[in-house]
Image (tube, rainbow, N blue to C red; front, side, top):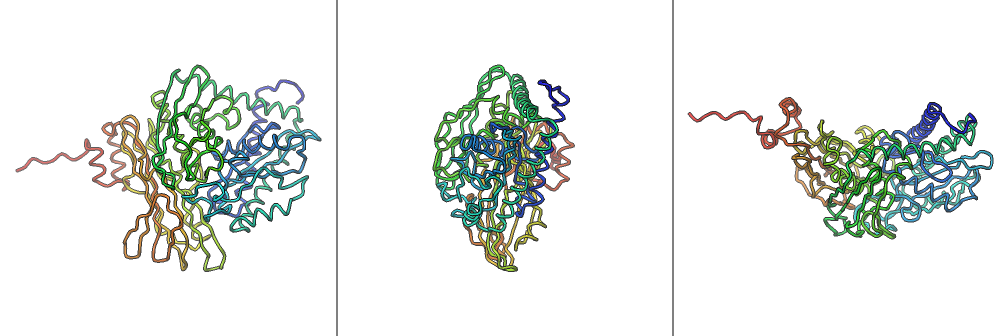
Length: 566
């Protein structure tokens, strides 16, 4: 291929080739990582970028929240190292304030691809590590009020230089992280995936030529922007606004306001967060890249779910977020739990555009990314362990379907960790893994139900950290749909007694005579419950997911008629 113009068929073949490279790297990490958070839950992403650091292709199973994180790293590499980048270099970073990340557990890596002396692009990946040091095990506790307490901050650095591992840097990283053997295994999985990506991309380069590959990168990004702008043009022109609130920041600040105004004209759209509350002491603040990822996901989901995840989406939209605000925090703001806030930004976009695209929006989801960390010493081995999971909950109802039960939503697409994996890997017993009855918001279409996990330590005392959102403010319904239920944490003793825990339950001692109970929020309903079909009502009745009192209260039109007295 030497022509200056790439025909559509050749471009599509090459585009799919690039996607297969990103997907192969994703699977490589999944199969070689040590931690359950990656090998079982798939909390990682892979991507390919051009020489400018613009993200071109993201793996099919990658997480939307990682889109802007990897872009931030790649653009930072180009700014910092420029012409000094060499074949065999491998860069690492995680810091949200100086390296384009969104929180410290997400460690980014990127490796350049060269044609001779010419830089053509990068392969990149990101893993959410189960611990990166800091004041709390798992680096994801509530109540942390500055970035220094959340873990080891890594600026953009060379982990490999010219192909050689910088051993002292690796030793420094591992010394500051809990479970260094597990961390080393996950880091090595990332390194191997970078090398695999460079190999595969080099093979494509040999077949197509460097000039053509660069042209393909440009075409993919520009066509994504064009397709996104075309989708934006289908929205009615005008202004749309919505507000929502976070429960609290874990450090005493409650009802944190997120305000959004969307202005749309032709192919242009602007998301303005002026009026949003200032950044807070607790670790729910969002960096610019986190807000960018949430907005891009929401618009893509509403207007064109099949459009590619790359820099072209960024180019098609404008975002205004005041520096120092909750959605564009500045150093030294704590950000570990930013995913919960990203979910609320997505809800705000959906809420604002509900009247414009009622057939596409969903009601408020569980919106929580409810996190749970169990940590201690395994009595079987004498080795420390950290079990980290973000728990699924209800998905909002849609214009034509009920919401899904107990799933990750929006900017995360990780799985719920199987019971077998928990009990094989950790000295923990899962006593219950179930749906939480009656947590769905009623409607013509109902919201999804939250989930319950009940976990007890086996033959040892461990530490439990739980962080939940929508534990006070219910997930709202749309167009007459009712609100879903909130979540909660509590301890259950052997005698059945319950001890309520705070929504940001930090460093709770858990002995074998107690179990930790985690119940995630449900989701809002869509449409008037009076319009629910009898078929759907009878399915609810037969499912066992709802009590008779819930069904009678929300769908009285199906209640059996009362007999006349006498």
